[in-house]
Length: 208
Ligand SMILES: Cc1cc2nc3c(=O)[nH]c(=O)nc-3n(C[C@H](O)[C@H](O)[C@H](O)COP(=O)(O)O)c2cc1C
Image (cartoon, rainbow, N blue to C red):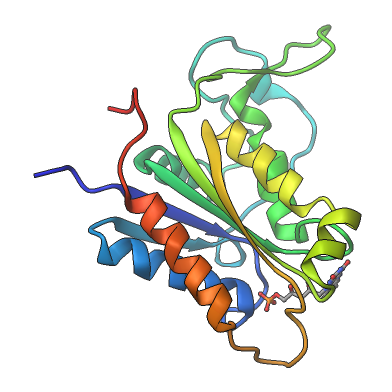
């Protein structure tokens, strides 16, 4: 029997009944139906402190992520990421980009890089992409306009890369704020199910 695929969703929406959580749940449910083991983390439930730019976590070379000066939920979150074969990163588009809570998480990913003082740019500690990722985003504007004017998928994709994941699909839900509690359209549900099946389909070559 094949080993089940472990999927972790990291959600940056502010609303548990919002469109992002609904879409994420559809993707996870569809992956689960295909035998995947799924977990979901809502960032708002976690204690995540702002990065202070002390760069302590970037000074020591090596594959291990740097240790942060903050004793909060970030290291447990990174352990969950290590458990996962596949990731889902999800955020509404707020002010043209990911939500503030997702941005805090992304900034804290600086620990995934080696960046000693005196060097111009960070270098990924684990450049190999051994996981797969799906991105989920939503906007009040039509998707095509939001994708042109905002950078939410760019930010999520870059976070996936920092976590060693290759992005294999994106669900961008436009016109997502027409009603206070908006249902997913049938088309979006179908797309979500397709992505769930894709994530559950198996491990990439080279994954253990
Ligand atoms: C503070 C704030 C800023 C927003 N900025 C944008 C924006 O720049 N562009 C856009 O299309 N929608 C914007 N929206 C609408 C959200 O993207 C939309 O409500 C969200 O995708 C719904 O996600 P949720 O149901 O998971 O909360 C904004 C909403 C809020 C509350």
